Amino acid sequence: LGVLTIFFIYKLSCRLYDKRAGICSALILSLSMGFVGFNHLAKYISLLNLISVGTVLSCMYVLKSSRKSRSTLFFLIACFLTGLASSIHLEGPFLLLPLFLTFVFSPRRSKSWILGGGGCLLAGLILGIPTLITHFHDYFSVYGSRYDSQLCNPPPSEKIAIWISPLS
Image (cartoon, rainbow, N blue to C red; front, side):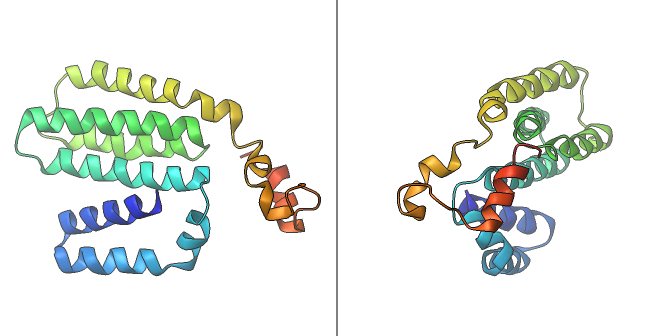
């Protein structure tokens, strides 16, 4: 997921500026310790990062596309990814802001975008419901070998993460 996020950042920067800026931004992200730290294991935040950048990239394609059919496709993709992000984490609904701004400022918008976008948003929410239900509650049973295969005593920092993660 982290590699795809780096690729999406590259594409977004190339779309906004140029190829050199895309390479620089992808390199900076790939060398960022926080990004590497969050993405070295499969966690929900890795998926949220990927979906967030994918949503912004799709919104950028909507605004910069010259064809109406392509704009509609990317708007529906952005709606689906926003619905998926909203069901993964509490910060997901913040992606409604770029989606709304894309709808308002797109010169090729149509009334069918409202119905189609709502359907795609709902489909993303429904598809993400298993993530809401499980929310990585058995994370340590999957990666138990890290703690001598018996899940005896995780480090104190991860005990706090176990307690906080159902709240977030």
